[in-house]
Length: 189
Image (cartoon, rainbow, N blue to C red):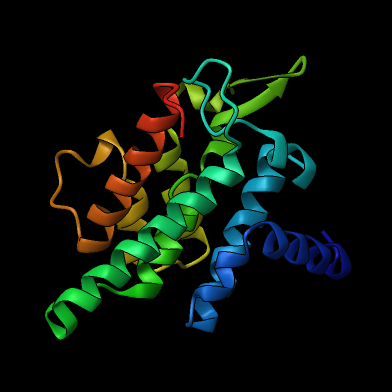
């Protein structure tokens, strides 16, 4: 992809995921956007398509989009972190940048796991072999995203049940499942 297209893609990514700009470390912020760009290109998606994509193929008639889910869970993580820091001050050990980058990258592998076929979102061929935590870690590793952020990606779902989760991963894991459980059970908000 040429430099102009790359810059336009980055601008679009920052438009749909403005929370990337909350990452204070410039290098991590850039790497987070690059992983999103890689996933969009590798998965064969367009910005327009991922804006309409349901957040899960496991929820029938899902009316929450992938981007809505990513942004909502990231915001919930920030809110939880803020409450904990307000309550416990310097007794908390939460890295804000790790939490935000992890929250924004935890589901990016769905762009590899899923595909649009005949107007329907389904598991892609690669998704039959690797779930999104694995592909998300692989893409993040390729871009040099720190291991602490990769840990959030790797452990956020059932794959993390055998590990001791970091503080950031615990926050993300619970925020993610709050959103998933509320949406998948069709509870009114």
